[in-house]
Length: 279
Ligand SMILES: [Zn+2]
Image (cartoon, rainbow, N blue to C red; front, side, top):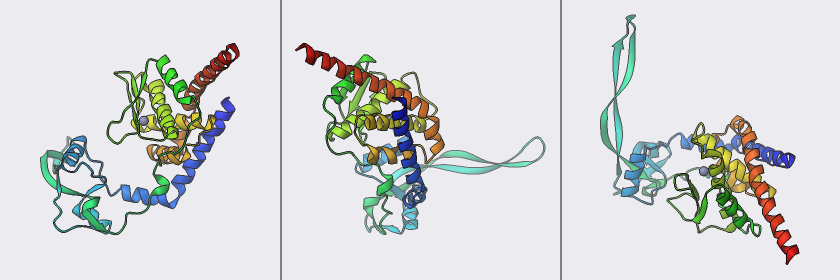
């Protein structure tokens, strides 16, 4: 089984390498560089003022992307840190400049829907696409019983924009209810991957964690005849930050985890066969 899983992981690696060497990836990076990662508090403030906001930036940021705030649009208030530069002399008499946080001031940003002008670059190839279509018969139940065997209950639920979540505290795995069976199964494997790999505490970073579990999802789905590339390749490319090394470095853990999930699936189908024979 290892060889097959290794081949699937190689497929993932080269697909990601292809994405991150393409023009759309470069365009994505140049656009992403223009948008801030807002703090949680500011994301909350944006959400409260405009729940459907998708891409948010300041007036001048939009201008640099050849988009302009429409007349009459009201900005969304967020807090921006005020930093001051201070010069301090150290022991050896050298002057050093420090940035000091001296509080916050209110600034205004605008959602893309409040602006008009040049289209943002089409970034389809670097955006995960929800999967369509059916999943192999019986796979959902088999995965759910594997989750149960490690103490996790599987439910259909949605929180915010995510396709699923793994609640370590309440030992619950959730998959949003409004997606096609293929997407639901892939998300279930992704969250099961979190439960199996990350229950003992966080790995190095969210980037590593997401790269690992979506790789697991791709490798397991490949083995059961479900092609999740349209979703998994861009997802892994983004979370790995385009780093092929990160994908390679996690391969060992990914394949071990995929093997344990697939192992439990084989057992379930053998049980079924026995039951078939018995009846
Ligand atoms: Zn995740």
